[in-house]
Image 1 (cartoon, rainbow, N blue to C red):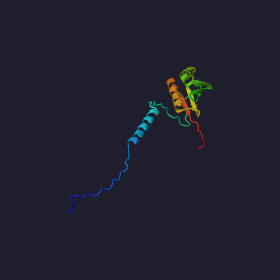
Image 2: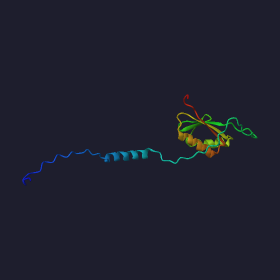
Image 3: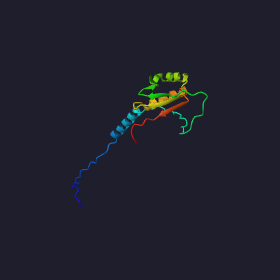
Image 4: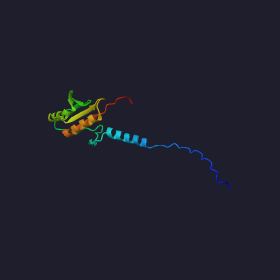
Length: 145
């Protein structure tokens, strides 16, 4: 058939397929995971028990002596204003103890726009530790609905 000295035709050059390397993608994903782990706050959330919501039109039962009026607590950024007097968060427990010993048993808590959620939680936990009978939180609307 063919002669022994005949050579084979040259093979066509192989096309090189583009390959997708996952190593750099995996590196980026690990960097993102590490970034989110470092920047996230890993603290246990504490539950703040809330009492029953007072329904409109119901009056409290009559007391033997009139209770002291509630004291206004305004939450600022990192501090509170208790009845017009500025108190830092570190001094909050002592200030609440002084209020409780003077006969105050009710607080009205409101916050400013600069206050954080942690500031509100700190005030509510201090009020719970002092055992105030009535703590009312007022929500401030920021715009028209």
